Length: 283
Image (spheres, rainbow, N blue to C red):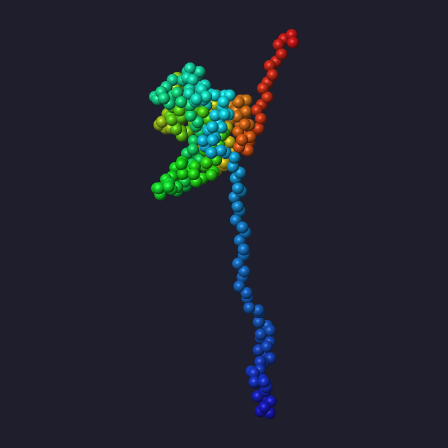
């Protein structure tokens, strides 16, 4: 009896026997919880790669602009004719020097949308992110040209490059567009006014649409790369409607689109057909 009792408490093979109650408890116990799996977050949305126009280097773009304007040599703001050597023909437009005669006689290539509108907020502009061969660091427009391909494309975009009298370019600086009270003519017959406080430029009405469509093109193609005040965009939207594009503007836009591979969204790819004159009475 002693041996049997011992065998009920201790296994005959020397191991401890498990009672029926303990077995039942183990069967009823819920399985141990596994640690919850950490859900895999969805991949972050990627910003679509912007397809930039196939712009040239800035110097090459200015040379190409000279070719585009070869049959339409007229300064942008004042409408003055100029020679192939980029000298102003002042009698063609009644231009008078405001302050600097050497600048008044010179035509230069300039931007309708000033570079600070798409560069002044960039890291390459605001910090000394570039280094020269001698180890010194620098920033600003030269650094952005060397380091930022989007800035370089915007600066060399042919839609934004126009010929203008150097004196006007210097006075215009990077001022916004608007209306200036009074009609003080600073440049003779050229219908352009510039004021410094607050900074503002009043452009001739004949190019309001031209200016607007350059800004609107840059916004459509480069998106949020521009920093332009909301009231300026409202002005340009109105100018675009009030001053439709003429055949030259369409022709220029089509030629640039063929070079850069991106059409002007407001001008299409071909100029409008000129209206044929009505036949005279009697056939």
